[in-house]
Image (cartoon, rainbow, N blue to C red; front, top):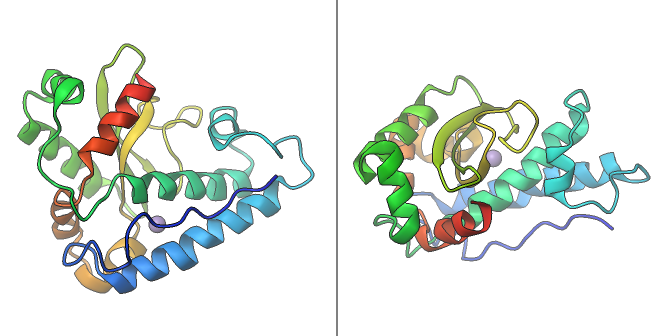
Length: 202
Ligand code: MN3
C-alpha cells in the first residue's frame, strides 16, 4: 500500500489574490508530490508499510530522517489544502469558537497568537492550532516538516489548522513579507473544515 497525492479540492487559482495560482501549482504538484513519493520510497518493505500516516507519525523514530521529513510533509500539506477554501475567511463558530474564546479571549486574540507563532518560527516550518483531548485548543509551531503528532514536537495536540511558512509557500507573491502572507491566510481559512477536524480530534 502506498500513499497518494490528494487532489486539490479547488482550482489552482481559486485562492487568489491571497495565494497565487503559480505558487499553488508548484506547491501541490512538485513539493507535496515529492514528499509523497519519497515517503513511499522510505517505508516500502519496512514495518511502517500499510500503517496510517497518523500511526506512523505518532510512533515515529525521530532519528528516521526520511520518514520524519517526508511523512511530515505528506501529512502537513494534506491538512493545509483542506483547511483553505475560496469561500473561506470569517470566524469560527460553535464549539470551536467557544474553545478559541476560552483559550485566547476572542477570535482577535487567537489571530494575534497564530500570527505571532507563524511570524516568529525561524526559517522553515509550520504554525498550528491544535486540539487536546477534552477540547482545549492551543497554538504552537514546529520546524521543517515536523508536526505536533510527532513525539516531543510543539504542543503535543492534534493539528486541526496549519499554515506552511516555508518560503516556497509564499515567496513568489510576497517575497520576504511573511507577515502579509499570514494575514492573507486568514481570508481563506475553511472554518467549517477546521470545526470538523476539531470535533474529530477533541
Ligand atoms: Mn510546503
